[in-house]
Length: 376
Image 1: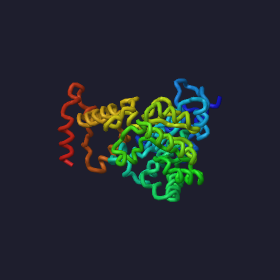
Image 2 (image 1 turned 180 degrees about the vertical axis):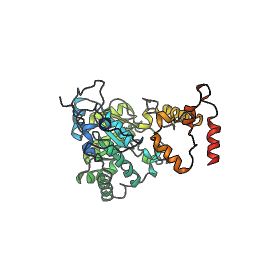
Image 3 (image 1 turned 90 degrees about the vertical axis):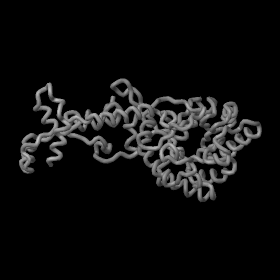
Image 4 (image 1 turned 180 degrees about the horizontal axis):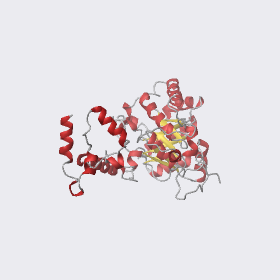
């Protein structure tokens, strides 16, 4: 069995390098390969496998997800998983833990940028985030929403935006919201080689025209309109379609009628796969919770607790400690430095504590430090 660092996810390249020489690192540093260069999506693939409980590699390396793989999953009845990602850390989490499709959703406008709606997001802002996700998501298929206004003027304008998202944003497919009116656009983008994921039902980019975020297809006419939109976009070349906020029976019926995978969000269990927003899944978004959202972790609570603990530790002086979180200087060099500065008698708080009798080691620390600061 080959247990080289590039083939076994249990081995930590940073730890291996650390054993070769005694070094102290900053808390944030770039990840580098053994060759000393920064990683690319391709070079990261062998290192971004799922972590296993055992200490040896017992599973084959994860394969890169492709559109063909998604079709195979649909045929076999294997549910497809899709989650949003907006930056390198969330992309790495999706990559490490087996998510099939990483979606850089325009929901980043609200959950990351604090904008009131997705319609405020620009193409340049989207590209900034897609590049970050592309650096962390080596295995999932990388899809990104085309921002509002970047594909509406004409099919040719949409092609230019889509090509830019591939070339500058490093995405592998784009997602468009709309019905039969976008068929020509989807066809043209597909013809130039950019895969298109469609999106029907509730379309957040049109929330104003829809009078809010309302469930779609609840009557016979509405249900038929959603179905016809999905069929038209499939015929135009879409490789998959998102079904958002529609009755579960309708979503299952559309899935049965289509030849392409369907990804549901608020569409029940009868679709080919599911998608949710990262911040909803992790309880990091504290706006209104949609009915279809399920919380799978309470990261928001833990983040709040962590911030409060940090503030408290800084305020009471328990963080940082000189021994655990500080760096040392050779004693002789330190004495030489003080002599050069003309401060032979200066003592740090740590020095005073070490020199003070144990029963009185915790008294007078603040006043001594203030006195020295004032003297300087």
